[in-house]
Length: 504
Image (cartoon, rainbow, N blue to C red; front, side, top):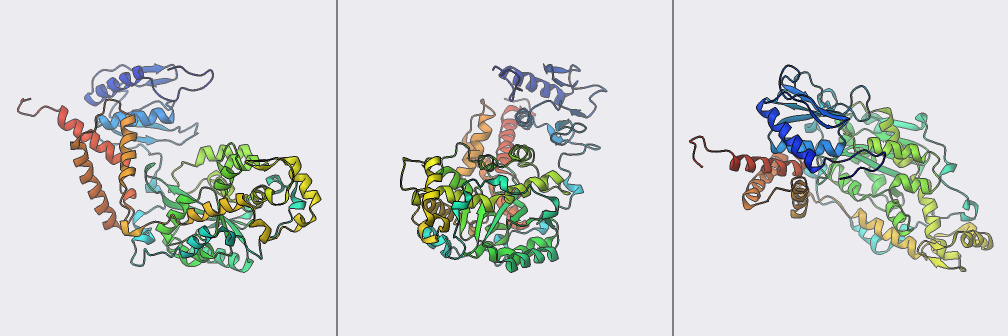
């Protein structure tokens, strides 16, 4: 494996994996007292002696992918291990700690939930409550089949002639005073009153979730809303009353077809809202779908915003890279975490207008060569100047746009991705297969056999029953991928250890 000039190696080579495996074996048995030098900047400390004691801190210079691989090797060898430290911290960098006896006394974990306000039992998903299930989706089905009805006669009249040069740069950057942090039922009610009395026709929304594994629907930890004038960060884990009151105070605006809900890649958000709060989303505009129909080269929200002239686009990308995958259960939230969350919704209301403008070019630009993204930019601007009627783009004309109708149809289809409460969170066979394949990719010597299936089936049943008892989604009990790793480790131990009697 070669390394590109000036770029960190992201994974261990086969030779390095062998060395780490040998190192872990010596650590588990308390043998040897020699450090392992993988690279100049990656040195594993001695595995025994006074310098190691019960715990060994592995080098913080391992990359995230390398730590994941070492984690898998530890699981295979039945070695206790945890992650400590914080991402991008100079004083307390992220690293792994090993233990021979499972004791990590005096070692602070990376996500010190014991010091946070998070309590799993208090935040019961709506889908697992007595009134859960049977959410109404008839309106969303009608809008999916008739996307022209998503265009509203009152709100959707645009003066595109005056917007020839408009981009996201016309918005003021996010200000702290424009952000309302909602951490109590009273503040949640104030948020609901503001949105109801303001008569807003559009809101931007997003959720931050904690995912137990890539194959689980994460638990909602934060909701962000933007009216275009004010931004709300709703901390649903700040108080059980906030969690329980969300449906009553804000469910109405998500279900109101006269208010467009704007999000980016909304499928998982829709599913999580229905599961955790019993909230359905009606009449949505998915900017991710719009970006694809417009043929943008990169369709992540930060890149789409940059494409539409966001001045602080690089700052947004940097914040997204740092915080997007963070543990959103941990409190208090960092100021930059909140800023990142707000930036996910602050630009959505104007972004929708700009994307509708570009999607509907075909309506009035009757001349010029049309491509996948509509007519050329100069023809588009010329058409805006020629056609006076464009200055008053009426909803009836917007409904002629095939590109816009395609985006609206796809967006309403995403609104139908609600959580099926009758399944009580059980995982599909494809999800389990993905988890198994993910683990197998990390261990090329692993052969999945019927005995693995038997044990995994029993553990999945245990997890499902535990989730029902706790009245939570089973993914919050234990991630599917982690269950697969446990099965692998147990089977490996059963068939590699000799019987105590000395027989084969």
